[in-house]
Amino acid sequence: MKKLWQMIKGCPLFTILILSGIIVSAGGYAGAALGVYKWDVSFKHPMVQTVLTNERAATGADASMAEVTTAANATTEDATEAVTEKSSEKATEKVSTEAAKPDKNDKNSKADSNADKKDEKSTKGDKTTEKATEKSTEKNTTDKAATDDGDKKTPAIDAGGSSAPVKRPTKYQKVDTRKSRNSCYRDVTQIALETQYPYIKVDKSYFDDALFIGDSRVEGLALYSGLDNATFAYMEGLTTFGLMSEKIAANGTETLTQLLSENTYKKIYIMLGINEAGYDTDSYASTYMDAISQIQEMQPDAIVFMMGCMHVSSDYSDTHDIVNNDNIDDKNGAIAAYADGIKLFYLDMNTAVDDGKGGLIKDYTWDDIHLQAQYYSIWENYIYEHGLKDDAFDF
Image (cartoon, rainbow, N blue to C red; front, side):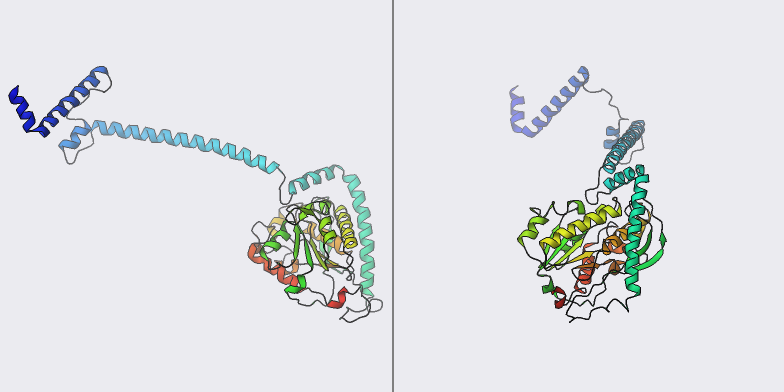
């Protein structure tokens, strides 16, 4: 015993190895006896083969492991497919739910619903449309007569310097009849032209006393143009029906009525219409002009520029029965009829972004409806090139 103790003291490392082996073996044996470990060790075991040979052939154990791995992978794939299928179902349900919600920007879903309701009242709507058409035709006929007899009755376009304002009624360009695809607008037989006037190119200071009003498209003009000296009042989804009452000014803290009562402007630009596509043209024009009347009453020294609603892309227009360019042209033509070229002008920036087919150039838009940020400069340049001479503000 004394010699053993001396050996332990003389070779502590060897002793530790011996004791470790004993402990591990005892633990392994005890675990196997208790059923914690499976007692299945032989020279054919993969671990033993790995130690004893540099290159080992696949053993029965290897094959078993491969089968287990394959089965596990198959199970994983099945589970993945199940999860994917379930996720797809949820995604489909979510998309369907979202599709049922009204679009915040354009409210086209609401427009579709309104259009369906209008279809149920088609008889009444047809009578209203016929009456409105007769009224519009009568007005257009009067305008056309004034245009045809322009050399005799209407003075030539004022070149500036005249002592009295010259009335400039809107002129229209005839087009091949475009049949309406929805009761909210009429067949299109003509499109409005911008108010005829000897426009001049102006500089940035011209817009120091200008106010721009509109929906998300005007918001883009505010954000991406260089017109930072002008005042802007806008809101996503804005319509003529809430124009005076919605908080669209001063970063959404004031209504247009409040803004107009607190400030004085000489030029007021308005673009609306895309969110009213689902309303019938006569209702749209009537509400639009009511708002114009209120604006002019509050700003008697201002000239108001009605900017025709910007088109959507031709692809989008072709596949939508409500939000399409025929509908837009019909509504633009309806408000343009009220322009007089004195205190109320009609401008059509579509001429600057047209694709040759009456639609918004595809490359200019990111969603077929709004301009990409870098293309708002085209709209801005159009406005710069449509300035009025100083004497135009002498009423």
